[in-house]
Image (cartoon, rainbow, N blue to C red; front, side, top):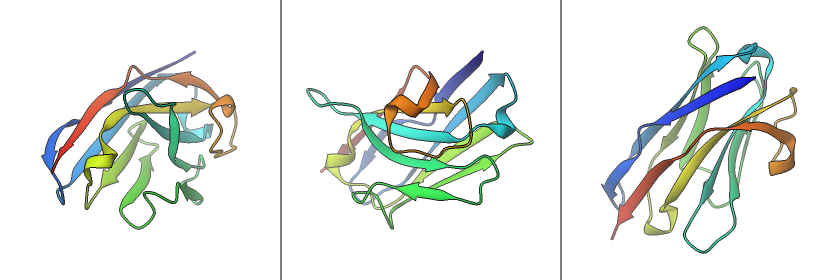
Length: 124
């Protein structure tokens, strides 16, 4: 079992930055690929970014590429999402997810554990 707790969300103006954190506890975190997803009101949950267990592989949705950076610190059991140049369309609840293996996938089905989410609101 893995428990995930997100933090760092909030209200920011367009063009601003936020850094989300996801603290993991439970089974071995360092061997799990991790992902960030988001869900805006009335829309499906969508992939944002993913990272392999070593941190050597990262993947991004086209909509955030060049603006967002995913990273992890296995010593702290924490994964981060640095979000720069935020846009109003980035407004959503952001979820952290842990895979049962090392597949850094954009598919929700690849992730076994999910956090409760943290709200990010970008004003224009």
